[in-house]
Image (tube, chains in turn red, orange):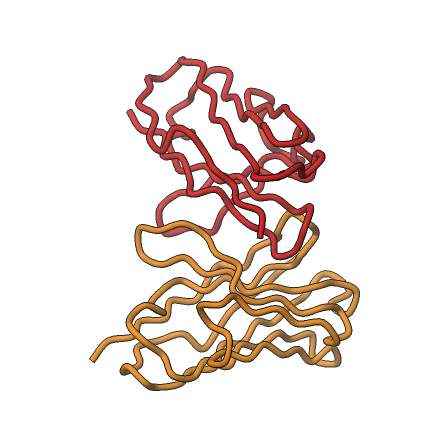
Length: 106
Length: 115
C-alpha cells in the first residue's frame, strides 16, 4: 500500500495567516491526490482533487499543488471557518490511502 | 443531488455482529465502485473495504479481513457491510463513500463496541 505522510500534525495559526500543509507519498502517485477538510462530528468535505483542481463551491483561498510524491495544500488567508483537520488521500493505486491528518488550530 | 445515507449503527457487545446499510440516490449506483471508510474516535481515516461496480472485485483491509463482508444490491441502490466478531477496536464512525477516486461521503454511522 502507498503510505501518505502529512506534516505538520498540528498547526497553530491566526485569522488572516497564510498556511501550508505538506503531504508526501511513499511512491509516485502522479497527480492523483485529493484534499479534504473535516470538522468535529462531520464527514470529510472534498476541497481539491487531482492535486490542484478546486471542488465546486470551495473558496479560492484554498489551493493545491504538486505531483509525483510531494504535494502542498495552502490556505491563503485563514478564516474562522477554516479551523479544522485536513487530510490528503491518494487515488493512484488501490487501496486508496490517507495521510494522518493536520489539525489547524488557533 | 448525490445522497448516501447509512443506517444500522449502534451499540454492540464484543464478539457481536452488526449490519450496516447505505442507501444511494441521485446517481447511477451500478456505475461506481463503493467503499466503507471508518474513523475511530480521535483518529484518522481508513478505507476498510471496497467493492467494484459489478461486485466482482472486493478488497478488505487486514484489520477486518475474515470478519467483515461487503456486498451490494444494484437493483436496490444499496451497499452493505456485515460485521462479525466485533471488538472494541472496531468502535468508529463508518462512512459509506462513492469512489470517484476522490470520495463522495455519506454522513456516517456510529458503531460502538463495548461490554
